[in-house]
Length: 85
Image 1 (spheres, rainbow, N blue to C red):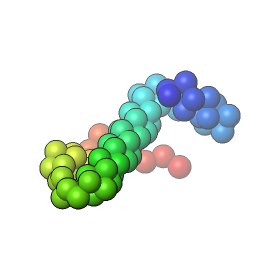
Image 2 (image 1 turned 30 degrees about the vertical axis):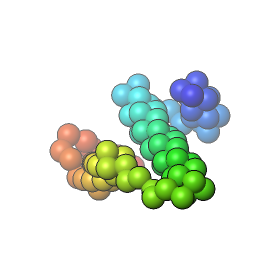
Image 3 (image 1 turned 60 degrees about the vertical axis):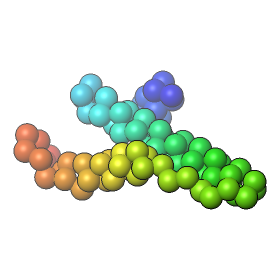
């Protein structure tokens, strides 16, 4: 997974510092994990529906999704970075 992202970064000609590259990789990993968890939840609930069962609510997935969204909304405003153009 990481090797694929690193290869894409090199292909696109992006020069990044190791910390920034790591952050990019970790964000991509978190987003992929969220997509995978949401797909699994949908599959579970589809199976339950096929068997006449009510869907389950995955509260922890919702909590983590909300946390990821909240961090994303405030991440850029954090102190300690410098804008360069």
